[in-house]
Structure formats: C-alpha cells, structure tokens
Length: 457
Image (cartoon, rainbow, N blue to C red; front, side, top):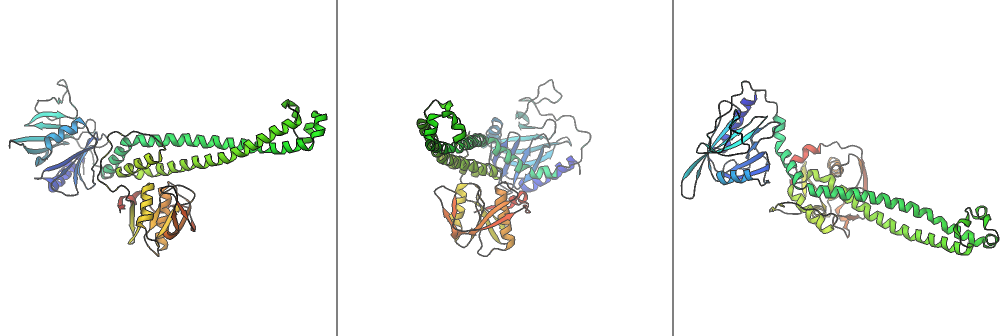
C-alpha cells in the first residue's frame, strides 16, 4: 500500500465515523496539530497533523482534551464550530484532503467552508476556504511562488506528485497521540521540571559540602585528647614547650599560648566540633530527604497526565521547596488525588504518582488486610495489592511496579499488610511496624506497554 492508498483508506474511515455530523470541539495540542470532535463517533476524534516526519489525517480513539491557544486555532474555531460536515475527498488525486462544511449563522444564512489539508512532508499546510476563497492559512506563500496562498484568492492545488512512496509509518501514526500529549505536557510544565532539577542540583552540592564539613568536624574531635594530654603533662610542657611533639604528638609552640590556655582552646575546638556534628547530621538528613523527594518526582513525571501535574503544583506549593510560574494553568474538572491501578488476573494493583495520591491510596482506599509495597530506604510510589491472599505472580508484579515507578531495575522492597502501615508527620511518608524484604534483580514485566492499560480509581 502506498501513501496515497493509505490516505484514501483514512478518508473512508473518516466518512464512516463522522460524515453528516456536526463539529463539537476543536483542540490544538501542538502548533502543528488539530484534533476535531464530532456529534457522531463518540469516543473518537479526527486528528490532522502537519508534523514534518509524516503529516497525516486519521481517526483516533485517544481522548485529547488539552490545547494550546493560537491565533490560527481561534480562527478555525470561530468559523467551523457547530458546522455540518458534508463531504471529504482528495484534491487532484494528490496528498491533499478537502473537507466541506456548511455553517448556519444566527440569521440563518448558510456559509460554505472548505478545509484544505496539504499533506506534503516538506511543507504541509492547512487552508480554510470561505465560499471557495482563501480565508486564512497556517502558512502563506507569495504571488511569485509556484503555489501562492494569499487571502482572497481562489485555491489552486500545486503540481501533482508523479509517484507515491510506500506507506511504512503505521507505528508512528498509532503512537502519535501519546507523543503529542507528552510534548504538550513537557512544554507547558517544563518550568516545574527545570525548577526541580535546579533545586536537586543545588541540594546535591549542599549535601556534598555538608559531608565535607562533617569529616572536618570529626577530625577536630581529636582535640579533646590533645587538651587532656596537655593537662597530664602540664608541668613538663611549662618547663619545656619544645618537648610537646614527643609528649602529646603535636608542636604547641606555634600557638603562642601557654599550655593551660592552649588546653582550654583545644577543648573549645572539640566542643564546637561535637555540636557541629549533631547539627550537620540533621542538615544532611533534611537535605538528603529533599534530594530523595525530588528524585522520586522526577522519576515519575514521564508517566504524568495533566491532572497529575496539577496535583504536583498544589503539593509543591504546600512544601515550598521550589518556586515556578506556569502560563495558562489548566482548569480541569477532576478528582485531584485519585490514584491509579492495573487490573491483573482480576486483582487491582493500585499506585500513586505523588504524595497526595499515595496518601489517598494507602489510607483511604486500601483495606487493612490488603498489602502494601514500597521501595526500601527511598522516596517512591506506594503500591497496594487489593487482595487478602495475593498469588506469587501478583506479588512479583507489584514489587516490580514499585521499582519501575522509582526508575529502578533492581533493588530491595518492603512488603506488608496495610494494618502495619502508619502515617508519619509528612504527607506521603509512612512508618512500617513490620515488613518482609524482597529483592528484585531484574524487572520482567513490560510496564512501558502496560501503562496503556492503566485505570484510575
């Protein structure tokens, strides 16, 4: 099958799904993509993509309800929303699609619009015709070109392609909705990721410096011994300070203090080092905890949907770890803390992507005889097996899932009943009264594919 034959197949699918219905919604998930929903074909949408790898038009099952706001999108919506879809065909036997619509105005006038989609890899384009005249286009071309696109002109197709290549982009097209969603989320919420990565870098540097200070403080603990030795040999050192190297192991003459005062100085150095060690241990623990927390977020953001980012925004604002600004934040009608689950062999295996979802999963949805799984000694997603007597296969799946969500391929995990899981003072962190340890050497489940089947509570 060549590219043109595939286009004809897609057009026939579009006819079967949407012809003689009305446009309900139009989204622009990227600057090069339009997604159109119709009154027919519930659960399906039409995607028009002008990506330069392989521009295409196709029916998709994926739910796309996110959009950028652009001048082009506003024009398309203004003209085509609620219009009647009456025909679709190719133009000039080429990779050009013409979609015809009739829009009834408030005064009951009927306006004929045509959406021209030029699916040329080198220079794809969308042109809207109003009563067969160019109303606007994504890309305009001057009168001096072989294929002018100018407001008010009639549309003339370019010279026809003489030969069509074989169609070999099935996988690209099927994965494209997920690709544009990932790109949309990455672009829109990149300020959060940048802030988190910057904070992570500074915290790692801070922990390194604190550890270096701790090592220096530990070295200064020896001054207690020096002070005690000076007092032990006080008379000898008063008579002959030069003998200090042999008596106590250091030369005290370089300090310009008498031995008694020097011993007190050494005790002060020791006490300061001892006090510093307690404070440094606290600072290191606190900073490392923040490092682990940020890493747990960054490990999971590749799996985020838009409402997960909205949950994260609330969580980060409460914790006040980083500052960021998001342009045009989404206003979604959603359940903000609902976690996710897989259904495997009839058993639900739930997990959270952030602290709020973890808390909801473990302390509101789980029952006391269900089972809890977590990666050991690290921040990470809670995983809950909703079964009182899970099989070995289900347990292994849950253990591997907890590793995958922490971006690990091997490691030690904790496994216990929910009744042994207690809240701590920090949202998402828990204390385990007792647990079993499991070690996974390698993840065997293909979670990259399985996440297409994930559900939400």
